Length: 341
Image 1 (cartoon, rainbow, N blue to C red):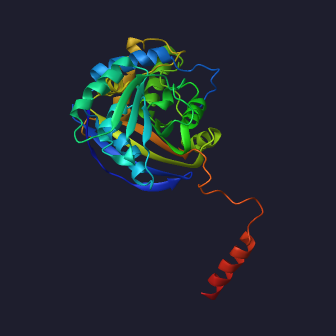
Image 2 (tube, helix red, strand yellow; image 1 turned 90 degrees about the vertical axis):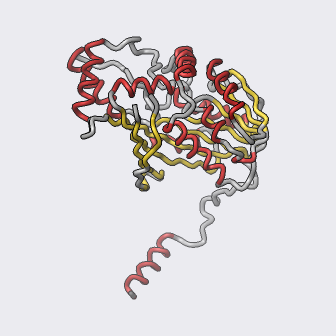
Image 3 (tube, rainbow, N blue to C red; image 1 turned 120 degrees about the vertical axis):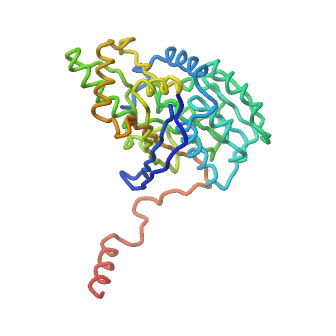
């Protein structure tokens, strides 16, 4: 099952310093942790991505939309990026939709899954009128196999939220960038699958008398800017999109998550959900969230992050105390104008 083309029912608002957009997609058929704490089973996640390589289709509307929105940021840049790294997540969509953006001449595609890398390489022949020199490697975002100051651009679309040390992975990306190099990333945010979280929690309480972690902790929007600053990026930028995907049933949602490689990879969770709990989760999900047409919605919150490696040509904040006018003077000026009018 794949998400069908997107119906853009979109509204824009400013919240917490980040732009937030909402979309609706119809389908036809928390936190940052230190590297010492292992939240995710990276070996399990690699196996899940191996499976996703066999389940995934040529196109997925949700994945493609996130990739398009991420690549659109390259069109806002006046400079070009001759050497780029695209790692993990939906790298196949990034490669297919790149279409000359960013002036990339050499592109390195990297994933922890050999099968995913092979899938992306096999799809190269279907990309027409593209003269980007592309190489493929198997590597881990937590141990980035790149030389320092060797890249102009690093792209990660829907992959970094599975790292145990997200700030550490972002720091490694910064070190691999040349001065004035650009970091572009899209990760799933904490509001993702909120409907499923609610239904699963209620079902576990009813059937098991308690709850255990079934869905992964994800970064909150308020943390994204701090992540970029903590990793040492200059001119940090964060904005948020929310996508509502409609499925025929909760089972279709789970199948889509498997095809995306987005199923649970927590160390501490049990391997299988109790059958009665699973059935109760599906029933609660449908009773609480089903639409009039019988479909069930699932929210995907995507946090987009941009940051630059330091360079002398970049804008810099003025030193503290260098202002030539005070806020009190500005307030008085505006106050006198209002009184006059």
